[in-house]
Length: 237
Length: 137
Image (cartoon, rainbow over all chains, first blue to last red; front, top):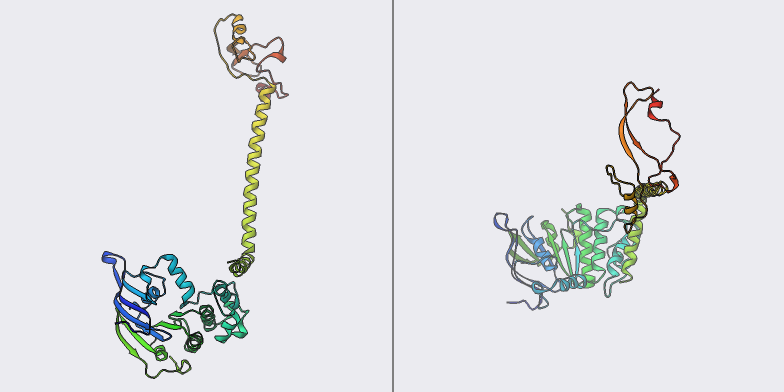
C-alpha cells in the first residue's frame, strides 16, 4: 500500500554487483516509502547497502531489479537523458569528501551550480544560509573541513532542489564540525522545503530525523519514527 | 549555457596560471623538438639539392653498360633511341701499375677521357687534394 504522503515509493529494490563467485548483493528486495519534506536517516554499518540505495534514488546508479517511483514516475525505466535532467533539476548531493573545485572560491563553487539551474538562489545567499557569509571569496584550501562541507551544502541547496541526498556528510569531520554541518543541512532544507535523506553509520545523527531506516546486509530491518527530535546543536559524538 | 563558461573559464585560467612553469617547460621542450626537426629536414633537403646539383654539373649518367670490342658506331645508334639525351663512349681497362712510394703494384682502373670534356657525360671533377699514395709519403 502506497503512502499518500510519499514522494518516493520503492518496491523490491535489488542491486547485485559482479557475477559468479565475485557476486555481491548490495540490496536484497528493499521496500520503502519516503515522505515529502521529511528528514530520513538511513542508518547501518558499512556495506549494509544504504549508500547503494541513495545512489539509486539519486539517479546515479540503476537497480538490478525492482522499481523506484518518484512522483509516480518510474526512475528505473528512465533514459540516461531523463536521469540527467532529474539529477540536475530535482536532486542536491552532499558527499563525504566535499568534492569542491580547489581553484574556485566558495562563491564560485556555488555559482558553478547556480549558473545551470532554473531558478536558483544567489550564491551569496546560499552561503549565508550555511553561516559562511564572511567566507565568500575564500578558496577551499583556506577553509576548515567543516566549512568546506558547508560550502558543499550551499552548493547542493542553491538550486532549490526538491531532494537533498547526503552520503556520510559528517564522515570526515570531527564532532563540532559535524554538528555545524548537520545544523546547516537541517536549517536550509527547512528553508527550501526539501526532502532530506542522510546516510550515516553514526547513530547519534539519527536523533534529528523524522524517521530512521535501519539497514543490515542489504535489507531494511527496521523503520522507526522519532517522536522527539533533537536539535542538531544538541548532538555530540 | 554561456554563463556556465564563466566559472569554468575562471577555473581554467587559474589552473593554467598555477601550471605556468610546467607549461613553459613543456613549450620549451616542444620548441627544441621542432628546432631539431626543422634542422634535420633542412639538412636533408640541402644534401638532396647538393647531390642533384653535383650530378647536373658533372652530367652524371643515368644508365651504364659495358661491351667488349664494340664499334664506336654503336654509340651513335644508341643516341637515336627515343628519350636518350646523350651517349658517351669510353674505353675501360683494369690492370696493375707501379706507383712511386708503393712496394707492390697498385690495382688501377684506366678510363679514357673524351676530346671535349664539356659535352662528355660523367665529367671529371678536379680537386686540389693529393692522390692517396702521395699523402702516405
